[in-house]
Length: 236
Image (cartoon, rainbow, N blue to C red; front, top):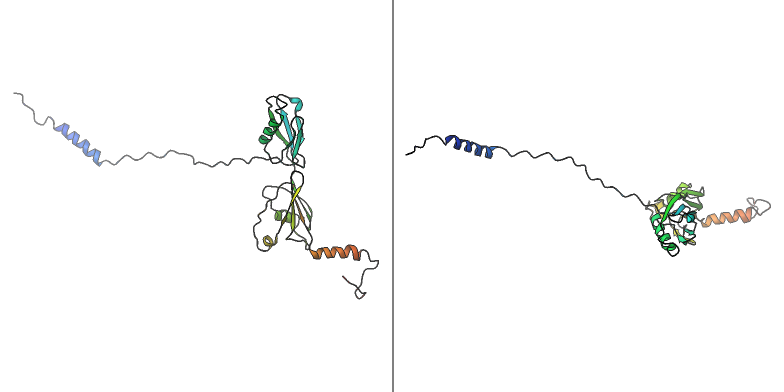
């Protein structure tokens, strides 16, 4: 009969017990440090340029170079091409205009390929006239308000009628007029709700008192042979 030696399995059991205890008592492994990830940055798309009156365009026909032309956008906002006729370009992007020329010339050209480039940007301005201290042009920029343009020309004169400023906006064939009232923006600081466009005209009329003074100067004082004197009968 085979004898089993006592104590032969003790080291193995002790080793297993030690490992089990170690597995329960040892702390969990520390988490790995996070990877360096660059924060997401919102990239704003660049604003799309829209054509203005006065822009000089270079129109190219890929397979018909004899039709290539440099043409300015006229004050009515149109351009005229040999194969496409008259097209309204102001307010469009170059991609929009390419598509318009392609559609208008497809009846004369087979699968026309058009490229429109802005050869020279127009010097866009706003004109401020009437009762301002320095009538003249103001360089146009996006967001320009009527009051900013008026202050750029020295502000209102003492005889300006601030509640009936006329804004003229160039349309396709003519100007469209609107009346602006600056009473509250000047007295209460109310924000302006109007933004000017390239080519706009602001005209500030005179008050009634200003018109009377003009009448007196032109038709009374400049006509009388002798300037009126106090006590002479009539004074202004």
